Length: 135
Image (cartoon, rainbow, N blue to C red; front, side):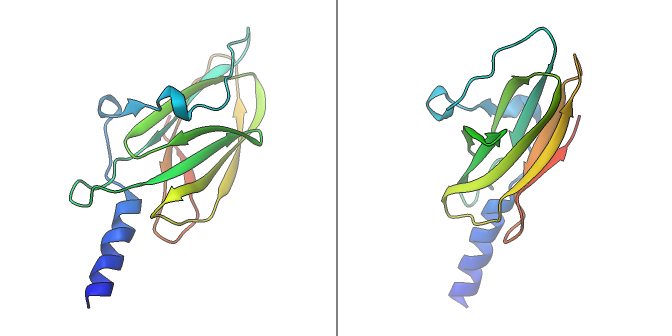
């Protein structure tokens, strides 16, 4: 019985608690591996991740790849904003270290000049990580 309860608590920690934009904080500099300078054409893309449930207090790392380049490690309650040039790009999310396990996934996005996009990183327990467009 204890194993079942512990498993349920760990799985719920990976699913997250919804956050408001103001409550999230930016990914710190030490977990930024690539930079994306601003060009004449393109737009900003933001990826947000929900906080881990407070009663659990744990979370896992997720890696964000942009066009097959490891760019960020994002933790619960964080966000990252980067500039991409016009055209098609591939955003990939994968599990890093931590207690949560999931299968990586990728999404092709189309960036248009001046049209910012925002995504939420969803990590259903035992399922594929997903990027859900919110704006």
